[in-house]
Image (tube, rainbow, N blue to C red):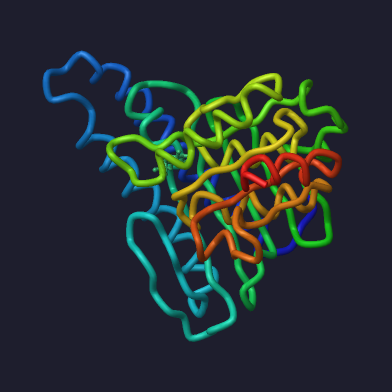
Length: 262
Ligand code: LIP
């Protein structure tokens, strides 16, 4: 696998965290039956994964900034570069023993995502991309799907839960989209949803109320695989506004019109 020194550092960190999470995932399956449940155990697994990743990345690039789901934001001596990390994306799946979760690492340079790694240890699928160098899954080059008909397309999203304020808008999205497509999937990991669009498995994805660490790496993967990514509202930055939509070349515009209610 070729790539820059930064990319190889990211891959090393993702794989090391992945080994720790796989070990913990096996224990989580045993904890399902416990009265207290695996909640606290998963929180520790999540924090340990971020500690491993931070040790590797900041050890290799101590001057870079940091934004991690568990440890928050730290400015770096180099104000132009920042790691954006979700050590365990799909936490609820992990908690319930569902083997669909990932480690997501992005490198941002002057506000642009320039390198991305998303690792799914349960399926041994490592997605990676560098700006201008394409998107890959292990050693396979990725391209978004070629579908042009909405009625043949499937889309992914995240449906809010626990009283989140974006539920009404998401239900309206579904009411508009479901009648004109082949289906919607809600598999619980935004990073893998984006990686699957880049791999041509999904034809598009959208989500409201999402964090930068969930989507930063996946956004680059989709773009480098020939797809399109934007905010849901005109000119919104997905990383700032926490709302993202993406799709293949032929479907992105009609899909975005439906989600925008145009
Ligand atoms: C999850 C996202 C998912 C979203 C969930 C949650 P986490 O991230 O990947 O798409 O629907 O609400 O935010 O919390 O597992 O890192």
